[in-house]
Image 1: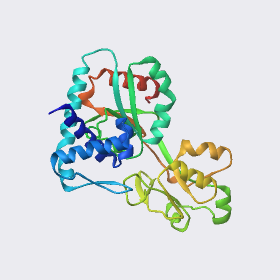
Image 2: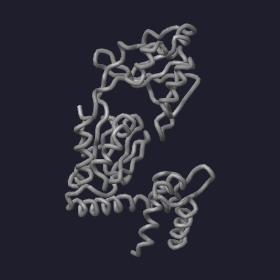
Image 3: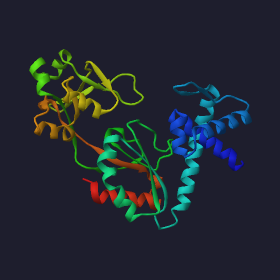
Image 4: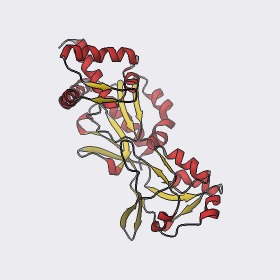
Length: 299
């Protein structure tokens, strides 16, 4: 296989994975028009259309879906083989691909970028921060930071930070107008601000616990968002009740801008974990990254 053919296949997998020529082009560090030409060359060489393009999205054809299913594990294995060979060097260097949920990125990565780069100037962190649940190896990532409940099987997991707790909260203005819910069931009569996980059709069901038994409640209200920060701002503005991490809500509680609700129904749960495939442990840049975060963030 010539180098250009391999690059075309890598470009196709990236576009399929990101669902967008613009986002894929950013990851590959080329222009969207150049990337589009690469895919057209691949389709012309193969004699079959791989992607259906619209102004809003990119979708796989049947041929594209079949090609992707065969390519992902093959490219992941190639990446692992290259990483394994590079790991023979004891000096951390090269690119390390990191996937992190947004809150995890803000808490465990953003405060330490400068310090890490000063310690390891030859390591380039390639960070994707979003709440999409991706398969680590198939997505081409070396390491991820995600909630414990989202850990993949056969992954090494290192707990970062303390346990977490989600609580409901509303502004004093909202409570003056609509009152307080006394139980999670009362939320059905309230205006709740919903949040949807990326890639999911239905909004997230709020999770509560009583005497060790966890259960979820589907709430309704005037607003559905895909970013918890938007939900928090809406709650501060009196739109409705939000449900988010207690440590993110507490500053507004102390300032008198939000009132915590249903606290007796809100239990702690394991928080964020650093996870990576066991076969990547020999990668020097990964070892450096793991040790760095363990010293600063492990609980």
